Image (cartoon, rainbow, N blue to C red; front, side, top):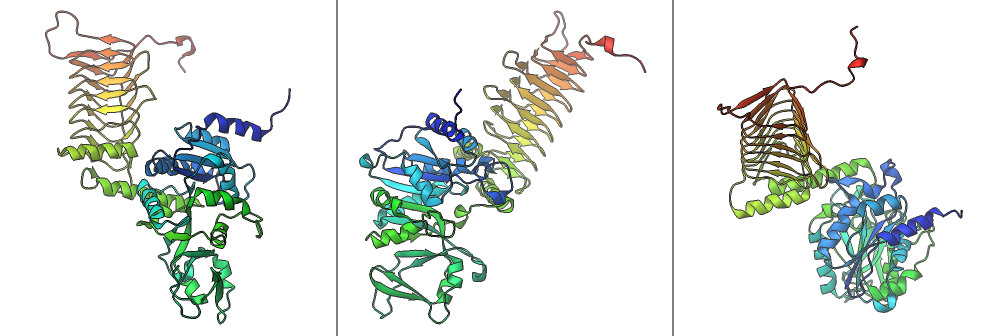
Length: 501
């Protein structure tokens, strides 16, 4: 049997998971996700580390889909390509490219553009780092609008360093000043000349300064001006497609790493008569990327703070530093608030609310409550500390109005609990696809009870019982409002293995 090269397997996966490129879409986003990130010190791809429970590359992809609606998205993969592709998955208008050998950001964009038919496409290309997991649709939309209104051929999204200048190790954005060496006004003031790396600035002579040429105009910068320049490159770019396609292949690898740098396009654009501009976003945190665990943790904390700021005057969150609410649930809370009725939702410290959960009015969740999956709450429900409710895809947990779930309970799978029922501490309830657990109204379950796939009628009291695929209903002739089932245990199996010591 002929052996298949690993790269061939990845290319097959790339084709299987890629949507078709649509030439009529005016925007294309390229997401650079080929690197692994040695400094993150993990066997997991850097691009799959999570910020607010979502892999960073997926967050960038989602921001592009919202900020550039109906755009083509090309994700460039490399190291750990299979994991990245399968994590993001098959999505409308999203395709993949494979950079087998990492030769720099310019090379990655070259690989991505192989998926574009140059003869039939004439739009705008945006480039984003795959680790910029806090970038949002508002920033992308802002960048897009600034690029179009500028009429520039290339634009760089830049950051502004807010710490001491001596701690700024970023490459500086060098712009055309208002005047040249002869004190003559420059009509292109503000245009970007180049990105000057910090190490190169340190080599500038204090007296001679740094000289540059822009459109045959001699321009000089002092070393002090360069060091105190706070504007830096974020790695986000916008290009008109035609000049990008013309110049991307002219980038040279004449550097120590022998790599193709996307930043070199600034000089090429200027040299060929194209204009380059730069703009900084309203919020600086959106430009954060990470190379280590500590910065990743900072980004996660920022994401948590952003969620808290959205909700802090709508619901009660006991500990702003210790909670999780999935982003779609956050949006549902905001939509409920817009209706106008006070929500009266209270979350204890350490509460986790995952994807699929549907909250309701007057919901009280105690400390360390865990919710994940399609869980539907009625009104006036209480779930006390350390209880866990979860279900797999295709399953559902539904709680009626006025239900109480006390401490340290576990409810899993397909489960229905009727109104005004009370599940006391230490109970386990589970239901499968074939055998859901259905508990009626005004039911009490307490003690060390376990219920699986059982149906419990209304007004039943269950204590210290194990009920596996049982139906519980009042016997005929019983007139008491509540019927008790206590100490029910099924016949034991494996008795022959049990002996007295």
